[in-house]
Length: 602
Image 1 (tube, rainbow, N blue to C red):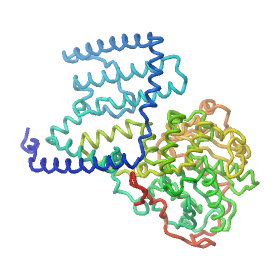
Image 2 (cartoon, rainbow, N blue to C red; image 1 turned 45 degrees about the vertical axis):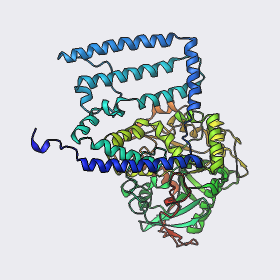
Image 3 (spheres, rainbow, N blue to C red; image 1 turned 180 degrees about the vertical axis):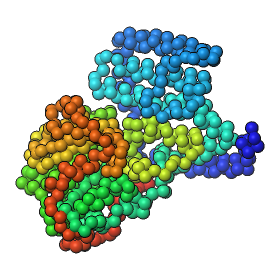
Image 4 (cartoon, rainbow, N blue to C red; image 1 turned 30 degrees about the vertical axis):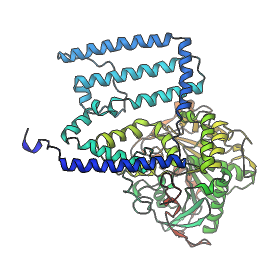
């Protein structure tokens, strides 16, 4: 080994300084943690007591019928004998086919050592065999009701993901190699990262997924120029500057989800849906919801609906046009359809078209989120929200991370704490970390009446702002866009919306997931999308006849939208109408961030 590549000995002075910093940080973390407990700060959404009840029922069924457990143990024992033989053959220099391979797309075992080194190959296959065996066992246990079975399967997967050998320094070849090469500095840096994240979370671990100082709305994200032209307690309405000499007569309104911030639709110029729509000659408006604190605890779903109606009225004042086209993303799409039904009951037909991105109207099959739609868990959340007035954004973010734990939790545990790296500046993960709160009353109504009772799909099942909501009364043309790999709003569930509204519909299925499947720029050649002109009753019948198209679905949507857009008129600049600019886009509401355990924006 050449002198230039020989690992240097640890710097004892630097090591001492790092340890002193660790001790100092540890004291601050402990003090903040104790204070947090005294103040009753947000608890983790996952209650071990509730989880144990599901596994207690699993155990009871296994005791009643132990045959599946015995069969699983015998099969696992045989597989390990075969694995021993496989490893011995490799040690003897013989070729041997692996008993099991990591699933396609599993990035944890990409290091070549997992395949080339016999020891690490044995560790990997032993883990994969045990994981497959355990998952197979919990799937075949009989006697559990469907909800309990899904909980057991979900939390079993969480356990399996957590104990993967990649998550431990001594069984991860990448970490071992890095530790040797850096004389252990990666572990010291990783401990500092861990303590920093604990300190930032006031005693709760809030893993950084990106450089939280690398982005700022209005500086390098959410930079499409415009003005805030209207605001109330719940939202600011942004009108964007035109980029064309003429525009379509009918303005366009984006209704963003208030479970996250609006700028997912205006991240960077190259992937901004807002900028693209402006460049296509639309007068674009955007809802920017406030990040609520305890003062808005009493706000309900009704208030959010009426805020959209107020935004529609404001658009008429700003442009002189009453008729508009609209889009709603996720929860914003659910709100949009609810608003359309409310308007229909008032014989208000101002909305000429609507597109719903990955939005739920029938909550009978919400995917793995159903694990969290549990009476005991909802009651626990309502107790916490009753004390605080809102659902803390970190709790909801934690739920979504658990749905993809290997990508959104354990990858960063290894990268930040074991490898001692700082997370890469990534705009999408910054947005994902910029969590928002949910008002107490709104959240309880939404979860209980839609997710738990599934009343939105029932004509008159939900009353909003004094009106029984009947989605069948919607005659507005609706374009439904879903994503094939969506783990938050499964596409087969969102497809149900095509059967619930009364007007003409088009359903398009994008590749990828809840974010990338939607924010897939028109210039992109990734993912593709499926189309089919008819909307039969069952989603599988639709998919069977659907045709796969290349690239982005955005041009397909634009072609569908143009007949509703109206003729060309001179471009409108914010302030031309009756509403005068309040401040520059993206506005002040989107900049409201709350430190964990405080109610103060920063």
